Image (tube, rainbow, N blue to C red; front, side, top):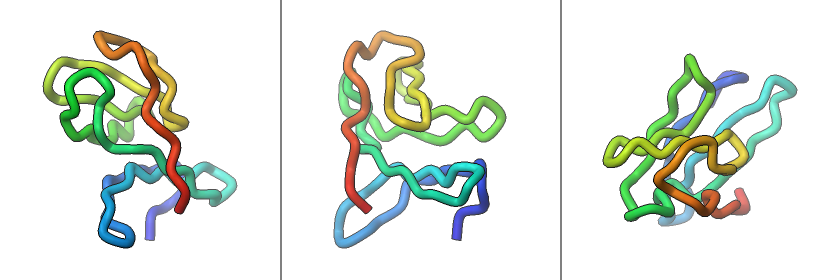
Length: 79
């Protein structure tokens, strides 16, 4: 029950997913594991970005790298 513009790490079918609901209501899912060292990302609602609390990598809602040290995007997942 995510409102538009929000994201959260959720469990679905035994897996964790980083899920974002866009302004049109569509859901987008990526792996919640940072591609740098595998920490779980958190959603920053003010920046609308996934952020790694371990080393500061930032990812767009679609998983693309916004800021390193990660160099690979978060893997897209099916919902």
